[in-house]
Picture 1: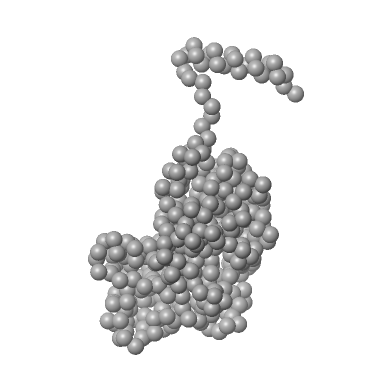
Picture 2: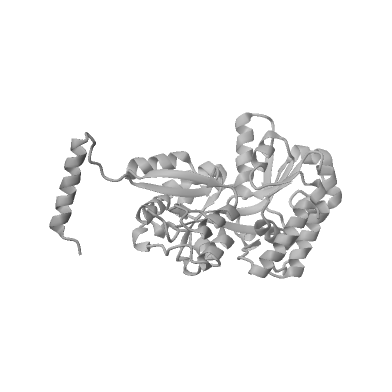
Length: 369
């Protein structure tokens, strides 16, 4: 055990040395390192957090869960707060990557949306390791004018058949179709098209989706999980299978640009995937205490609403709904009604052998081989 007297002597000695060298004596700077998806938080929220707490935020971004997973499994990432999606959260919990949340430090935890927290338990039983940040759906975004011009006014635009019918896709190829590069999201979302009892863990059922995607792959300009936002907004493509908030961000950018690009988003009538992005703290986080301060701040209704208003995704914070912009709250593509919620599926992580099977199938879709 160290001697308190010796400790005081050493502190005094260091202080005198610092003064002799002309340097100030300062407390260590408080900082947290955050790793989150790109374009996924209101910058003002980060500025206000630092002003209020004195904790500096170093904010890095990624555009795929695989990148996040690789960094966390390697260890010593240096990050204090990360934002894994549901199945990846599940896998990383199993790998022992995260530390349990100290809920005594999360005084705003009562603001979580009970139904969202309950669904999140499919990945994190008991909500031990994570809190929901945003949730949404995987559906279809489209430029209605460009699509109607090629398919006619009677074509059904609220069905997965829009992007799975080879004849239809061949007509849309010229105006441009993109899909997210994420089999974890795309396959479970499309499965309901083949029947209500389809199982995202059964290989035969998975193959039905991948076979259908293989047949239309030649009409897909690109598989990418973020480029379709600007492509839609600029009118460079007419259809994108992607995340609800991303499509609505594209619509917002088009409106701001006043370029006459009109974008709509639909959750297909057959059903789709409901996904969750969460906040979790790595086990080796260098600033875990301040990471809890950040999570508690993000759980404030006004903060959660500010982020929803900025990114156009639904928040897992129930009281925040009262502070969300009316046009966002009323949009069924962001906050679906109860009937639509019942058609949304939650996909947990695939077993390792199924993951390898899916990877092979996805490579075939991406490369054509």
